[in-house]
Structures are given as C-alpha cells and as structure tokens.
Length: 169
Image (cartoon, rainbow, N blue to C red):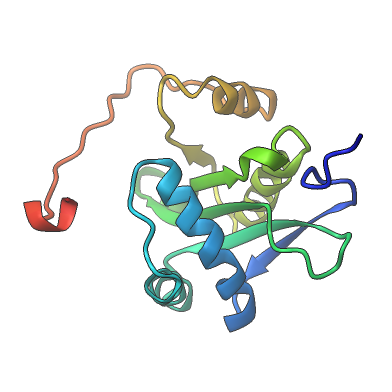
C-alpha cells in the first residue's frame, strides 16, 4: 500500500514573488511557525508579512512542490536573505527558515530548497551561505553537513530581545 501523501513525482522549487506563489507559501509558513510553538495566525496576516518582506527585497521565499499533480500545494519552504559582509565589503547570504511537511520528509525537498538558496546566493555574488539551527536538530544538522556546511568554531550567537512582552506572548 502506498502513502499518497509522500511525493512520487519530480520536485520543483519555485521562487515566490507573485501574489499566487506567496499565497501558496503563506499556509506552509504558518505550519512552519506552528511547528516551532507559535500560534497559527490567519493566512492574511502571514501573507501580508511575507509580501512586505519580499517586495522590500529583505527576504526571498522558495517553495518545493511535487510536479504530480500539477496543482499540488507546496510541501516545503525555505527563506533566505543577503547580509552585508563588512570585512570583505561584499555580501553573504543566510538561510533563514527551512521546513518540509512531516509526511513529505526524506524525499529530497529540503536539499532541493537549500540548493535553490545556494544558487541564488552564488548568482548574487555572495561570499558564503550561513545558517543557524538548534543544537538538537540532528536531522537538520546531518543534512547541512552532507550539503557541505561546517560548524564555525570560535563564534558565539547572542541575542537582545527588543520586543515588548505583550508581543512575544
């Protein structure tokens, strides 16, 4: 018996820069945020946020879909953006978000999404592609290592929360 929720067709990665592609990405983005403990927001709020960041060129959004059937919703999502690389007076890119629906994992969608971000970074002249993930994300860490990412020794990640308490809850 085959599970029809697991991809069987070819994977296609799309850069989301139209109303239609961003609308398709917004539902998946909501699921990604929920996976990390955030409440499910209305698609309208998420779509507005994604659209604003894409139109301002602060974020690039990619989705992975299975070619069969042609109108199937996306199964995975990645976001990336350029960051100034001050010391070399260039740019590097950061892979910000990567999520594949649980039922569609281990089918190549995450690797295809990372590859799309990598290719876009190369095309933009980036000097490197960086990412941050949780230390216990063993599946993600394994994927990133297989794709050539290496742990950066000697750096410490710090954060200063600027959001009022009411917004964070």
